[in-house]
Amino acid sequence: MDFECKKKLCYSKMKKISDGEDRGDYDGGFKLRLDESLIAGLYDDVALNCLAWACRSDYFSLACLNVRFSKLMKSGYLYELRKKLGIVEHWVYMVCDPRGWEAFDPMRNKWVKLPKIPCDECFNHADKESLAVGSELLVFGRECFGFATWKYSLIHHSWFKCEGINHPRCLFASGSLGSIAVVAGGFDKFGNILKSAELYDSSTGRWEMLPNMHSPRKLSSGFFMDEKFYVVGGMTSHTDSLTCGEELDLKTRKWRRIEGMYPNVNKAAQAPPLVAVVDNQLYAVEYLTNNVIKYDKEKNKWDVLGRLPVRADYSNGWGLAFKAYGKRLLVVGGQRTQEGEAIVLNCWCPKSGVKNGSLDWKVLGVKEKVGVFVYNCAIMGC
Image (cartoon, rainbow, N blue to C red):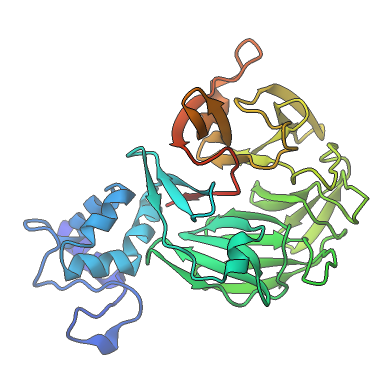
């Protein structure tokens, strides 16, 4: 196929959007006109590929250049193109003080404030769960008149009320894979511990009920591994802990119980298991020993790898984040130094191996003068 044919094919695949003259033709995508160019001297399909390789942090500035760039950025087309080209930047989104959410851009080593959530004061001060899926950040919490879910759209740089969840819940397990996410368990507004599960599709904004787990559980953790969703840990009552795990095959829509998958018994005062998956390998944090452990799928057991760069035993795992950050593990926690308190982002690549019984943690970033407690944390790769 010659270059001209590729150009026409690119135009035919692009979604339509109003260019200011035919607003009735808008459907949420982006329309390119053959008589204009995004970048002088370049065909628009070439220009779009160049823009896809630009840093995400530059998109805010590009949107201010003119109306066409603004519509391009708001269409979300560049993020779809980045996905096709395999371009991913992982940003860290977190709350470490009541003033609201911030995002850390590791490419520029800078922090970006997100708009404030337009919620009531009850939601601001209540415990919350968070989850990044696709180009959205979901935040679950309690408002004055019940549970609520707010979502931050990376494309629109705004918060929207997320509707449609069938069983509002808190203290549940969750995990995301691409544009989908699963939430399972937790408890409802009446305090009932749930075994129900739901799937969220960020491309449509819809929630769908899944089959129930075998056991109700709260304070558990979820993750995707080998394209299956897992739930480990948690409590089935206010006093009884679970050491079994459950595996959901999204193709068959069936749960499988795995005995002894997470033998570290949860207690009511402890945080849900801190788990993360890198290259389809499961890692976790042992609160009492401050060790990183790795799950052996074949033997259904855990092996100790090495120490964390921060203390997890001080507060039973609360206030600490342990996440997959691309091909690396990320630990986000507070540290006290002579200069004061700070939140430090440490990462380690499992491929680098364990050297003399220790893990080679590298500092990814630092947030100073914000205390030492991480309330919520999520990783968004776009």
